[in-house]
Every structure is written in C-alpha cells, then in structure tokens.
Length: 514
Image: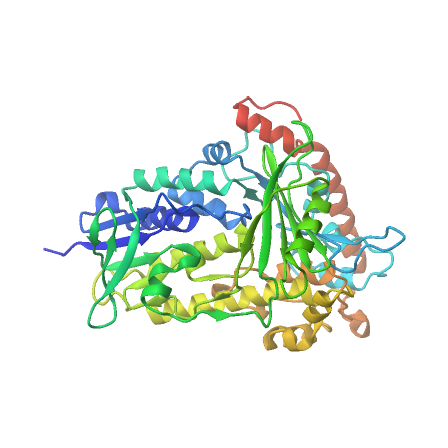
C-alpha cells in the first residue's frame, strides 16, 4: 500500500490560501486518500495586503480553483483593472503646469499577420503622433474614459478587453480559505513556535503552541516576512537587490470617496514624487493609497507630507519597512517558500500575486509524489530565481528612463545601478523595438510588449529612420491606426461605465443599458 504523502502550509493570507487551493485542485486531494494538505494559520498574525491588485493571470487561476467571478468580486469589493497609468515619471510637473503621463494597458498591441504596427508608429513624426498605447490598442480610450472592460451579462472571466482586478486583500484570503477547505484542505489554527531539524538538515517537524508537534513530507513556508521555516529554521540567505531597486519603505492607508457615485478608475495610478511614487487603487467603496519611497532619499516625515498632499487631507497611514530582494534557494530540503518568505520586490500586491501564481504552478507540476522531497529543488530554484531577477530588471526599467532631476531619480538613471542584461537590451532597443526573442517565456512574468509600453510611454528613442525603406506598407499601417482609433471610440461609447458595472455586479441586477 502506498504511503500517504502530506503537505503542511505554514501561514495563511493570499500566499498560503492560494497555494492550498491550487495544490488541492491540481492534486485532487478530495479523491486521493494518499495525499493530504494541512494549512496552519495563526489568528494573531494579520495580512499586510497593501497593494490590492493583480495581473490578468489571476482570472485563469481563480477559474481553475473553482471560484466564480461574480462571487469573487462581491466578496472582495473588487473592481476591474485594465492597466497602470504612470503620472510624472518622465519629468516633474513644470512651473507652467505641464505634466506627463502614460498608460500601460493589459491589451497587447494590435497585430496582423505580416504587419506589426510598432515600427510604423516609431517612424511617425514624434511631435504629431498619438501616445503609443493610444495608437496601438483600443483599451487606452476605454480605460481613460473610466469604462469597464466588459458588458453586463458577459461570461465569467471573459470580455472584449484583457483585465485583472483590484481587491481587498483580507477579504480575498477569506474567499480562498472557503474554497481551499471545500477542495479538501485541512485548516488548523495555531501559533508556530519553532521547527526541529533532522540529522540531514531537513525539517523533522514543527512545534505549535496549541497542537504540539506537526509533521509533513513537504513544508510550504507562507509565513511572510518572518520566513519562519526557510529563513529562521533553515538559515537560507536573502539576496537584496538594493543596488538596483532603491525603495525600501511605504506608507499605506484607505480613504473614502467624496460621494458614493464617484467615478471609478479602471487602472492603478502610480504617481511619481521626489523620492519614489504613490499608488492609488480604486476599490468599490474606498481608495487604497500609499507612498513608496527610499529612506535614503526621503524621511518618514517628508513621505507622510507627500501622501497627505496627494490625498488632499490628513491621513493615518501604516508604515511598512521592507527590503527588496529574494532567496536564491527557495526550495531547500523538504521546505519551499511561497510569497513574502521567498522574496519581495515592491509593495504592490500584483507583483507579489503573480510570483505566488508562478511558484505554486511549478510546485504542482514538479510535486514529488514519491522519492526525495527535494528532488525538484534545483529546477524550481533556477526558475524562480530567474523570475525574480527578470521582474527586478523590469521594475528598474520604470525608474532608469526618467528625466527627473531629484537625487532619487538621478541615482536610478546611473548606469551602474542598471542590471547588465537590461543595459544590453536598452542598447539594442535604440535600433529596434523589443521583440519576443528577447525573452524566454517560461522565465518571464511580462511579455515583450509590456516593455514596449514602458519604453515608448517614457519617450525612449528607437531610431528606425536609416531603414525607413524596409517598412513600405505605410498606407496599410495608417489604415489600421485609423481603424484602431475608430474601434476605440466605439468601445468607449458602447461599454458601460466602470462604476455602473460594479454597481450591477454587487446588486445582482439584470443587464441594464449603460
């Protein structure tokens, strides 16, 4: 008879419960008596949940684990997210009121077989052409006009435009808890006191205050910044990326809308300031805002002033110190880290959630049903380390192209702070746009067009003028640009307002005209 294989997840929150639900679904533990998953959660430890955002990958994850979209949105005060708008990242507001912003939408640039529009946009007159995202996707117009990415009554997790969500992190954890338990996960409440190592250095068992010793074949550390197993027990080193990403503190709070029917943005706003940036996320009943900054460039008091100035009134934020970095070995012996215990790069939930999704999918695919628990460790560590490195470089791209003059931004533009691989790509992208062969898909969380949106939103110069004759289909490109503009206008008129669609979802109303 086969011996039962057990998994113990230490820690709840988004990381713990998403891991539990996904593994329970993938391993089909309800129908497999030889597998069991237990999640140990302390009622004394809260959820950070400062960012409350996701990438479009979350839709397939939620669908896969069996959570329907309407239930999810109602239970988590969720709204739709169609991208991120970056305000004042290129330069500071001018004395004449001149400001800069660009949108990074989730829709890929429009493409037809044999004719990519990016080179033709690059060859337009820079002073007269529309913003890149507006030129190549209909989503720009839809999002900027606060329209929803879909209509009432359209199918679960589908719509004419790509989207993710903003949500309340604490409420998401509760939804995931219910689903994981329904999928067969055993939920145990108690406080982890310490882990006991065996002669080979693996975890023999953990000791809890309420339940004594608890044993498993595989331990998943979802204990957040405390990293109780991977860090405290196993002593796995943490690799900071302070030489690349300088922000290390955040102030976070929620503020109410001025009125219940206030227009609802359908993108995250990231507004640059002298020492970092401020996030602004629209939930159904409140806005989540936060000031991200470098403590080496801005004091806590100054950051609080910047946040209050952004909010327009006094706020009472929570201070969140952090160190950007990751553990190069996140699977050690019979323990694997998921979430903050494995690494942290920026205080927005979307980056953290997409890394959780990547990690748990790899654990599921590589799960050692038999033999040594650390058999997949080397491959997992190679893949997750590459993801962290690539995301760190992707985040750096947002900072290093800025022309702002404050010390924080000048330090970010210093070539010495830019990863070598990114420097090499930036040199190449001066002569051609980013393409799919620049990246290995299994190691990436972002596609080549995500880099295009940042580069050309930040007015990066890719000079194709010496090879203009190699792009002769100008008339066809102009026709397609006009078609995108026309479709964008029509979509902005036909789709309901974001606020109205959220109201209908929460009210359970039948489809109504926008």
